[in-house]
Amino acid sequence: MTHAPAPEAYVLGVDSGGSGLRVALGRVGADGTLFDADGTLFTAVCAEPVRTGAGGIDAAHLLEQLLPAAAGLLERTGAGGDFPGQVAALAVGAAGMATLGGRLRAELPGALAAALGVRRMALAADAVTAYAGAVGQRSGAVVAGGTGMIALGTDLTAWHRADGWGHLLGDSGGGAWIGRAGLDAAMRAHDGRRGGSPALLARLHAVFGPAEGLPGLLYPRSDRPAVLASFAPEVAACAGVDEVAAGILREAAGHIAEAAAAVCPTAGPQSDDDCEVALTGGLFRMGELLLGPVREELARLVPQARVTTGTGDPLTGALRIARALALDDLRLPHHPTMLFVPAGDGPSGHVGAEVRNREPEPGGVPTDGAADGAADGAADRPTDRDTSPVRHSSDISG
Image (tube, rainbow, N blue to C red):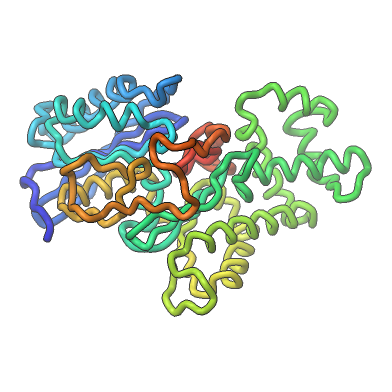
């Protein structure tokens, strides 16, 4: 049974990551309609990323940007800035939420209740908001590919994830992985070693200058995953005429399909139920040279996989979660760090604390250590964002 909010109630969705803070406003009527009557979805962009320090994500800095943005969005509707009673629910998806979101979970609920009068809220890892944007509240899986790569799936009782471990330990098949493989092939051609690609060496020269200078350009950089990912579009551009580059994309597709197969809730060749696998993020803008092999590998590993492209990005996902909260209809599984819903907010019984790879609960041994990553796509604008239940190189906003 769903809850009918006030006729003029609004919901707010927030997407916070390495490229800044985005806020979206939607209306929820008694009939469950999300958008304003004219179909417009109002958004605001704050270009400054929310600060992260020794104590984790800075809750005060997030509020400094969110509250004025929310007031501006409400003013655009003609509702004015009188918050109490107008905002029925709010959902925040943030890069690094799972491992760096302790302050957000401790401070935001009270602060947002005081400032906005909102009692229904959720704080989510941006992999979860990416899932909600791409798949909605159905069971299935999402692969978020950008600078890094993560797969996340749910059967609506628990979250299951694969990869997203950063460019040193994983993110296999993501933009940084493809870029590094392409640069390796270029350096092999420079040295005269087997497996080299003269075409990729030419692109290395065009992008970075002489091959001998690449280590000095790359190794001192703190944003190495993004620098590596910046070469991924060059690999894709060569793949149509260069077999080495095409082979790199095929190998990347194999890694992506394996991660997706690991999180499909109905995975297995004997299963009769299909599994929706949504592909989202800038990585997949490379087109059929990558998408074709991904589909082929998924068909082999999970014959019942139904591959789709995500219908919405993480900001859309945050707004969908807020709408579900406003209507007492949040079916995605709660989790203490991945999808945190403060006590009393939303229906009970959705704890979903299991994670297949046995990530620790808050206070346990941390599983991260990978570089915080970014995945607005290797083929789009690589930044340094987190998209998963642990910090890693994969910003997934579109």
